[in-house]
Image (cartoon, rainbow, N blue to C red; front, side, top):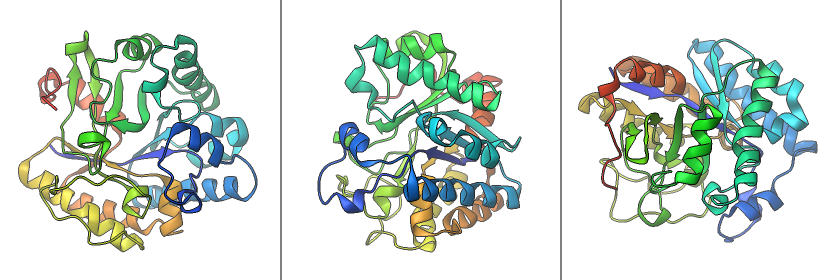
Length: 303
């Protein structure tokens, strides 16, 4: 069985188009994002647009939530996302770069433990999944100080591998694996694939060459929902043809909404995936693999 994993990094708007060519960093993110006013309203509109498409198609989705959003819009987020169709997991507390704070246990506890508790308290559900902000070419492989807290906190799967060589994009099609090499044989990695949609739609970033994916790169930044869909769609076909376990694009409600207020790209991707594979949340895939342990590699591949 092959899964199209519908998952969304649910965070404040990062206004890269106002920042020129300044490279992304966690510090710049902290300075650039807003949790009030029109930016917050637009952020919530993006989350609502994505949720409504999933509700209309009756298809599951995972929303990985930056907990700081809940401090500023908890009731609004509950109104949008508190639905059994939606799987609600963690995207840290403030969207911090975890590798930069890997040796600061207090900071890691805030980002990984306090965030988890706030999401669980807000929605009354257990949180077992974590997406690291930005993702990394090696994921959390070898990051013992982070993985210790991840496991102790109760996370059972992570999405941390989601870049190409030298911190570039697109990300390769690495399939799920267990973190056995780091001493956590029951911690599942569910890698991200292909483009981060904010980069696909214009955010400056290092693009790997020669082409890393088994289908062509877009000729230009995507400007419409249709163009975003066209950049991701070959992955659905490739996954089905090659019988891969999972295909997991990196999507953000704020970036989706900026291109298409009706989340057209989500509608198109779901309609396409429904015909070729199974649409699933991250937690559904985790549970499927947990019951069929050998579906995922016992340890990380050579990266």
